[in-house]
View: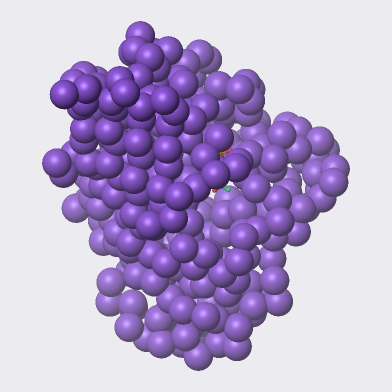
Length: 326
Ligand code: DP6
């Protein structure tokens, strides 16, 4: 038997309430500031990694399709980090399945690299701490560092590989926030996050954003601890606008929104005036995460589905981080 080891891991995507945008070190994905997120059900990646000393290269299969090109290279580059940090030289067979259809607009590098990190280390027979696993996942995709610990998570920017990792602030049961992932665009986005992070500091507004993060994060964490929905929601929505202001004012500028994005933003603002307290947050794409409390899910979802340009709405609820399932 030439097999070295195999493991299967399920990892969730996460939605950032305080966003990661811009790096102090691009190669290591050391961010300029902390970020905060919630792991969500509704978008899970399940990945099996098998190391075998007869393999002559890495292979990557995603949702039944053998992957080549840039995506496969990114996985192999990540596996090179695994090999370097674990002092091994075996190639791997990676088989990944997403709980959401490919190209649904929620393909998540966070769930993908969190699953890959834990599965790789486990397949090699190693037991790493969550901090070590989170730092490793970060090398694949920054936001993946936040899909390792449970529930509500803060990624400490840190200053080097070991110190830049995420920790759990509260378990998933802390607060039943619902993320209504509102898909208005299912194709691939034009500017990927990796490219976006490199443009961040070309915005004249970026340093002001970085300076303002610690205070805003502190207030957000207090609202999260106190479960103060209105304070929390207002902060999360304004943080998303702060992120998009940076994107729009970068050189070149990036406008991720589509007409349907704006339609959702305006509708949610109107519903708030009518007493339904939902809030919006948007990542590097056109889709809108509409956050609401459990009591409002049915009516907010129904209203979202009725808006022109909304393709589908996926429910995401707080959940634990990456777990070994086999
Ligand atoms: C806007 O983690 O996707 O979603 O490290 O290059 O893979 P890479 O970037 P990524 O950036 C996430 C950007 C964001 C905000 C966030 O999730 O914090």
